[in-house]
Length: 253
Image 1: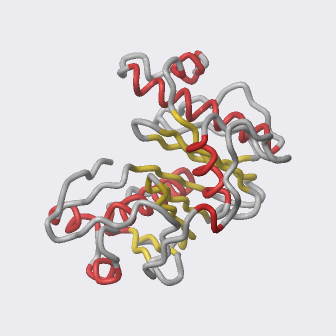
Image 2 (image 1 turned 120 degrees about the horizontal axis):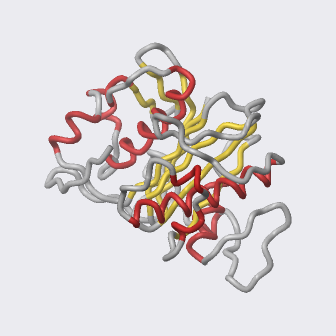
């Protein structure tokens, strides 16, 4: 889904920090010393391609539940060639930049699967277009025009997981009316509409492979204090969100 516009009523939020809905802005250095590209990768972590990838990947790992692995990777020219024949199936007619982003995301997801102990040569697409994960795992991928994001978990640890990555933009009043319930709107900090959008997208992706229920935006109600979202049919889903150069949301249950 896409909801990108400007609003004169909602002001932009800051561009760094973990979004906690209490106006805190925590820099990445509050979590860990930032690694330079020529420093060795810490034991037990997959490699990353750039300084920005490193920052965002490490921030992502701070909010993941036990049993999950995640990462963020910059989309590069030629990444479309990382797709296998089964992975490119259904993408033959899409523009190259879409195949390129899919190649980045799936290459990252395959590495995460291997890191969890579930090596795989490919993550094909189902008839619905959703990724088909190796037996014993659940996962989710997302990308915007510049970065790809993936999270994979053991199915013994989580039933479903969803991710979403979005540019930090302001949503207009018309979009907010479709997106937010009255209660959610009252609980939002300034400029947090895109954050709410991303959380709901992640929740949709976490529950749909299992529940197969179509959801409108208002069919998912986000509680900011508990960091739990509830679907219209009662599914409760935990979520976390990071706002560091991008909005990155993760949801799981």
